Length: 410
Image (cartoon, rainbow, N blue to C red; front, side, top):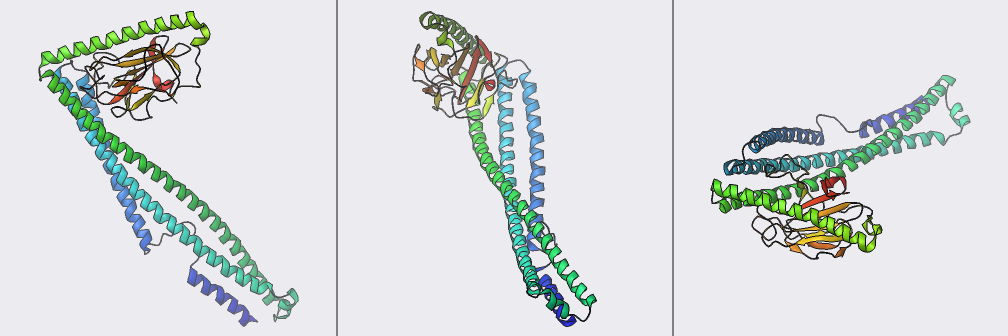
């Protein structure tokens, strides 16, 4: 019987030798080619991260240079320096984003390998469990009396009982480890999906940055051509741009007062209640190139930026952010063209640098209705004297005062 018991022990030793003791998590054997590949990928990811940090430092240096130039007197030379630094900063941002794309690709490859390791680990553990179950079943086929009578002594019997007990304990331990590795595998799969989503966002960001640098170069050339590189002409251009914005602001304030008074007289106070659940984005939610009262706005020395600029391609459809009445729909040819809508509860919205207008003054528009087309490319219809490239200038006003649109957008 000792010989038979020895066969059982030899059987499990052979199984363990063949399958290997079940490990928890991922194998760390230095001789494993997959482990070595994962280690190499980790080193490459680290190197990319170092590159990213270096580029981030360069971005900060350019931001500092831009801020210094913006604090200087508004001259053509200063403005060109600001534009040059902006272009250089965007070029660095493009390189930085490309490295981030490469880094994310490496991370996806690394996680994919780790998932494969986890799946292989689970497969090994399942084989091990099957072997344990077979050994336990082989002993369970016998009755307790048969087992007792087959041993020369109670001591031998107790040894076998302890052996079976250990097998059962090992079985439970391996099953728990399988559950833990499965849980880890699910987390890795979730991490992989996040990395893939991040990669798509980075690719989109890269395309936007490439478009932005093109717009910046067009803007710089437009200013140089418009002013004929003359300081006198540049100062004249600034004066015209300031007058243009001042006139638009005065007209907007006046129009809002008039239409609110007219609506109150015709329809009473109910006509001036906000009828929607909230605002919607007037163009697809996108990169904001200038924020409300943005300290980095390139023409802040002329006027505070009372809006957000949302990047949108020339001719993008503009939607009414909320239902309301059109107070102004101004087509100024190649000057500054804009639309203003009055909503309930003292709110109004302004859509600037429009290249096309689909509605007219006194129209009622529903939320989401197409009201015009975006513009902003220097020298094009509706752009005005000074603009920074294709975008939608979007204002929200409360009781006639510009407020931060981001406080109202979803």
